[in-house]
Image 1 (spheres, one colour):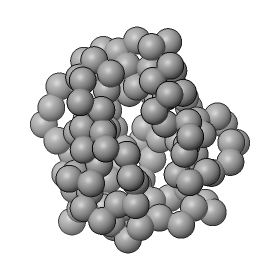
Image 2 (cartoon, rainbow, N blue to C red):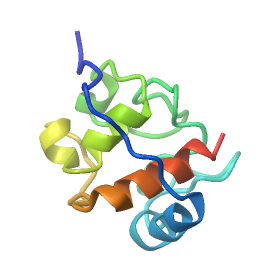
Image 3 (cartoon, one colour):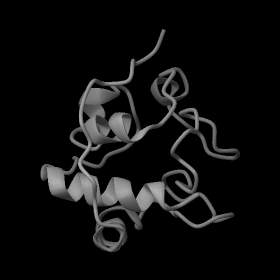
Length: 114
């Protein structure tokens, strides 16, 4: 069945601030450019509306491949708080973004990428 979409509200974020958060918190493992290469994590271009675990050439965890998630701002809002809690078994080692404003900004940036 997978992980259902959470019933949460996602604040409007600032794309420019989100780009800075991506650069400092995400870019060491992820790329968000169209056609960009996978790193330690998969390319995140076009993540909104994409099924989890589907970037070609990336070796996902079974948890990610079998989550049933179609990535949305709501899934990202909860996932980015604590990835290992939201998706037990994920290989993502990131501890999460504790500030709601940071998550909103990062999600706004990711929504702008594809």
